[in-house]
Length: 536
Image 1 (cartoon, rainbow, N blue to C red):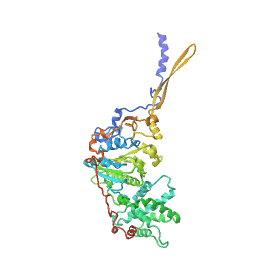
Image 2: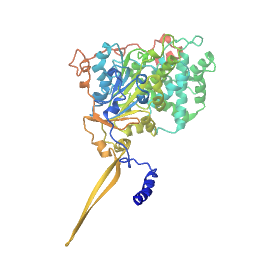
Image 3: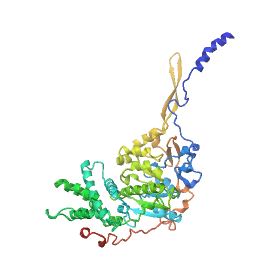
Image 4: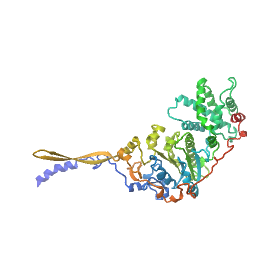
């Protein structure tokens, strides 16, 4: 007996002394598919206060109603091919939630018709900015939202970014020279349109007037200052040291062909404002951006899918909108707006279908990372990673990282497949191989078991996801596979129109942009010099 005990003692000591960490079944990776129970933790008990991701997965829109450990930002990336039902399975169901304000891009121009009556029935004011037909639209004038000379730079940058055709438009010297002239002209309109003593608005300029000023820069007689040169000198006499004049004097340092080239580049950029329909669209403002986060509002921006000639206006609109809304939210949260508190600040969901068609929005990565605290969230809908990469270069990674939820509907893009394959993680699998040998006299066989790692979803498995299925990637969670949501599953499915034949629910509208005559400023509102340019 003593011998048995003595023999066993070293073994016991050896076993108890092994301090290694064992993760059986996870040696090569611990990725797995998430369970429905894990997904349900993100859901608000009040169904209407959720964002709808798939048939079974929802996420509460308001963090203060959720447990701390599931409070994430509400930015979402949706990736899907044309025909994957992004509108039917994501955009429409979330509009039907009626749980926030909405700013929605509408590539086909149908969403407002399908949902407008439902929204108005529930107290929403509906705004439409139509870049498909350029008629029957609300109007957007960036000058309406300029409250200080600092806005001159912001508007100029937004226009330059929005009208940029590519990242290779020229050397930085030319871009900066063009911005200098643009700031001077926009600045002249800003200062000239205000009473120098009271700051009261004397008239409302618009971007078409910049094109008019550009036509008046060249001298007809080399010895006689042009009308625009005279206008800047007179502005300096009335408002000494103004920002517009300083920019103009810097531009005046350019001579000869350099100066002519800068004027030509900017003239080309602004020539688009010579179209009558475009002028009418920007001649006044009915968008009421400063009310988007305090009144119950839904804004639809119709952008064409095949012709992006005027889509830069949507880029400018978003650049100005984010600036206006951020400032408004900050002043409310800081208690600087009489009669308003945090409770009066309505959440805005920007649902940006065909995001790549909008054009580059200045400072978008910074906007995306900072709007959470201002009760805003952005839903970016694209077809593949390379669409973001072409617009924002390496910043696409920052954009992806600032979206806590990714919904994958499908793609044919290899890089996108690999990204979500990697994101799904690695799992541990066991393989078994058998071998047999045969000879004339005898044979033998053997079995070999191994532990290996493989992606939970390989790139080709990502590509082969079912037409009616989607993958839900939530920050810090395993991927969840589910059926897509559907309009027909929503309790308000009967509140929206499905075709123009559904006349009781189809939303027809008439806006100030229809049949506008004489919306351009009255001559009596203008300075004499600008009146001459305008008449020309």
